[in-house]
Amino acid sequence: MPQAAARRPRDPRRTARRHDREILALALPAFGALVAEPLFVMADSAVVGHLGTPQLAGLGVAAALLTTAVNVFVFLAYATTAAVARRVGAGDLTAALRQGLDGIWLALLIGALAVAAALPAAPALVRLCGASPAAAPYATTYLRVGVLGVPAMLVVLAATGVLRGLQDTRTPLYVAVGGFAANAGLNVALVYGAGLGIAGSAWGTVTAQAAMAAVYLTVVVRGARRHGAPLRPDLAGIRACAHAGAPLLVRTLSLRAVLLIATAVAARLGDTEIAAHQVVLSLWNLLAMALDAIAIAGQAIIGRYLGAGDADGARAACRRMVAWGVASGAALSLLLVAARPLFVPLFTSDGAVRDALLPALLVVAAVQPVSGVVFVLDGVLMGAGDGPYLAGAMLVTLAAFAPAALLVPALGGGLTALWGAMALMMTVRMATLWLRARSGRWVVTGAVRA
Image (cartoon, rainbow, N blue to C red; front, side, top):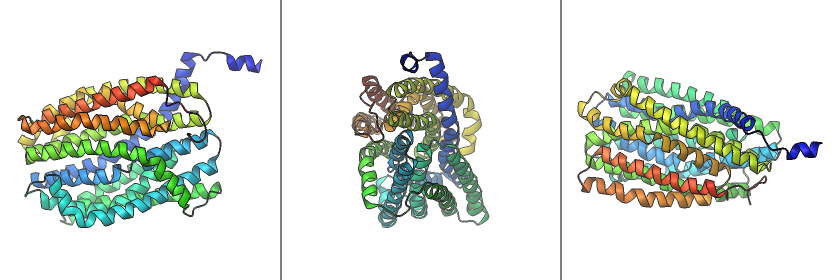
């Protein structure tokens, strides 16, 4: 009888409800945590924007560089989530935590190298991004202070990956909300109360980032001690983490290249356009993080199913999450259009900046259902450890986007045309990821992907 029951086909409706519960249990806390992350930049934008357009333009350039410095190593979260979740699915919590700690040690090493490289290169990096003479001093000031928070944020990425792999998205939510509240309060106090200007905004963000890293380290170290995982650095484990993350690094570098090209093109369109672009990009990141909540759930769930050897469960979860992605993208599209009159005045009082950003926001709204599919499938393939394919697919996307974006100034286009190129980029991403998901080649079971 047990064998016959095991062969009995799964009830599709019951399976869908179970996946919905799993997705919601992980995605809702992840949504709060992910939305809080771009709110750091949005809080900076709202505070600095009222100092003046050159200051906001400078923040736009510096924030793009700092976001790149952190997010280029987002594999510290993504690869760690997938690896830890597979170990959890296989029932080995000690190995899961040991692998997570290797990722944290790698984060500290990379962070130290990033600070050493970026501090002396700050003025050159600002010039490379096309900042105007009026905006460049503000961008350099913010960058030199802000880069000091990079090691803390890399630790946050790696530790977040550990907790997500352990199917815990609540702790990252609490830490992110606390970090955002501290960042917002410190920004106002240091920029206006202490009169530090744009440097005060940077110092407030760095302080909040350091506090978040300290909380994460406390949580992970306690878990490691509870399950007997060693805390000391293991060179072989650190090398293994770096090797597993290499394809995702290529994927992320390609994605960051897309965003930096967009920022550089907007900067060359003028201070009004780069200021408007900074606001649109902040909102784009906010929406992306909201959609990425389902992708985070996908990484954890898919990794756990594959680690437990349940290929059918992984495929069913993938299908359900795609449906969630489309519905969520459509809802965000309608919300963005309806709420424009409410949030645009928060960022700038400059009429020219408002006129430039409003039509670009309509393009962003139109592409959200596509973005929902992109982020979900990205998360599914990351959870499966399918990094090499993700790297190749993103290189194809970059090759399609770069010429379209670089032609915008040459053809006399403005910010709306630039964001049209961004919409093209998301469509290409969706096509490449959909083809891989349909092929089924990502379904590889076991505690460690071969």
